[in-house]
Image (tube, rainbow, N blue to C red):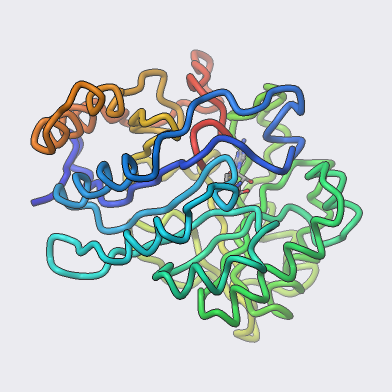
Length: 329
Ligand code: SAM
């Protein structure tokens, strides 16, 4: 069985936000004035939802937020996910996206509990610049320690995600090239999307894939390598074969045609696209005492409404009904 939408896309990648609280206030994401805005569900409710999604063909689960490492019970949740099996009897691919602030303490327990991989968000390789972006003290040292602990705990490849904004942190591109090689991590640049609380996005702020490749050549040229059809990142290695860079380019090179994702927000709403203006209240359905069969039907109904594509940069663009921190990136 698989979850297929009306455009023939196979949906097998579930992202679950387990809180919209965050201990960083990254300037391009949060205004600094809004706190958490949506309730959290008991962990058991997310696990029940995941079980139903797996029954429909989901093979990969990414926990996100807000900051997922703030959530009490996270390690036990990963252990429970680790016990689940996909429809063809395999272990789930379990990943977490984190700012890394608490990762040094949690990487080993999470790896022991069954976590497969971790992506750490990091938007500067210079400590002072990092602090200006995150508006949190001592973050750089903690995140670096987290990345190294994740590496030695076997959560490999550790991916480091960086969102670039023109005139703000695009001077970090070549530094990240060096960082990828020195730390043995895959650095992935993500194009900035209009999902921020402050609504400052403009096409000019986006540092595009082509430009990143060109700017990285000042450090060392990149060579593109093969990537799987459903992979969102274009993958590159440096010309000497050492160090991998990925570029996720939803703005300049949209990949909606290959989208395999579906999301559940911290308050249990299904979102079929980052840019959805409509949500499907799975938690609300559960609260009425719905059976797993009812939930599966509801999920199939939501997938039927999955958007064909986003409309970033187009004249009639309608902003998403939530911003990134409240969706779960
Ligand atoms: N707190 C976790 C973290 O920092 O990774 C998970 C949530 S955070 C919202 C997930 C990712 O979304 C981060 O890598 C962040 O940089 C990215 N992000 C936030 N706002 C974005 C935007 N407007 N466009 C592109 N990526 C964005």
